[in-house]
Length: 589
View (cartoon, rainbow, N blue to C red):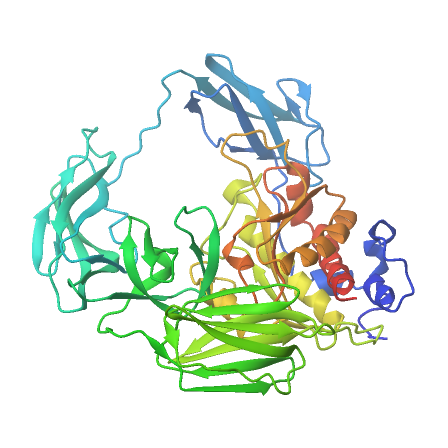
């Protein structure tokens, strides 16, 4: 048996030596606590402190959720009443009723007291000021048709003067509404997009702010493009996966894959309508300057087998949007604006018995018929300079080795948020562990647990990947991982009662993700003692993978003191890692 594990519940389950009902499993079945949690250093402050609000405030709300930290070894009182809603490390939350006027809230512990005054007023208003410009349009590369009227805008201090310069021309911006000097206000000006030969970049927009005798310049993060009359406006998907929704904007057609190209036929402020028939977020594509012909003419088709799957390679002239879906009988792939493919061979395939190719208007439809004895684990459509690949994945199997049942299994992990994005703030606010701290520490522990069971784990590090979505998602796709698991922590809306919501919930998008979520939530709730909030369908970007079952796990609530303290603890993290190990083995059994 693996030297790391004297005895593991997961391994024994795989060998058929333990019942697989999760209430019978306990974290004590693993004896490598120190090894799995050696990296964990999430210190929850344990002295009396009110973290939210951190100063006297005025509000119009009838209730307020106060959060803080305390010594877990001493009783804590609120205005003389014992508080029982505390976590194991002393974090506390109380939902207080507010009378109109001044409300003095006093916490006491031993010989220490902390006070905050919350004033309830019908006209409560928090006035903030600024001296800089922000939110400069466009925040990403975006295009418009020639002749369209486009609004340039930014947020700057009221009373300031703002001009915008683009394509060599400058325009003075107007303040949207009267406001107290220095208060953040919207400034705007409308311009008409110029004619061009094809699609042309006008460059970034430079905003010049003059305020309090000081002049500063700010440049938009995105470039502005114009598309000339009679020329196609082409865009290319820049994210690993991007939702494409229908005209009613309430149902999903497909997911656009990284590198896919299409023509824009209509647009609104936030989305482009593509020739393939759906709408995609402007933020998830980039305009293509210098392109005029995007028709995909296929000249060759080949089929190859690989160790963990098989691939159809279609050599063409463009990267078409693919509308895909998988059923128990077939894999359907519709390539937009594509022609030239007459047939497709499946000779040598372990997954498919036949393939049909038909032309549907300007689109090529490929239907791959599944063998009754085969299991298509997942699929991926990928592009490389005119070459479209359809990768089809074999079902992974456990190794049969009781000590390393996950030998040969590849698992991609994702820690929600990153070092520059704290995610949700918990009971300690910024004075203690944030969501990103917890998700990173937990993901490392999960990685150790899965590796101890023999798995190969894909986990991009360092953890500062929050703003680079592709760098978080691409490694798992490149490795054709067998599973993808993203760990997050839950929260609630501002000032709601944080004591009410609790438990674990798991999200999936592709149908193949739901069984994985169901396999994980049992051991997770059993090991941690948290409630199950269910396995739910939602289009989080990390759940859009079609190459493998993919889920997003909300491990518990940052705003619940009991769950927060447990998620920060070595014991809580150890139990979650064990739960994932058991869940993965159960899913693959």
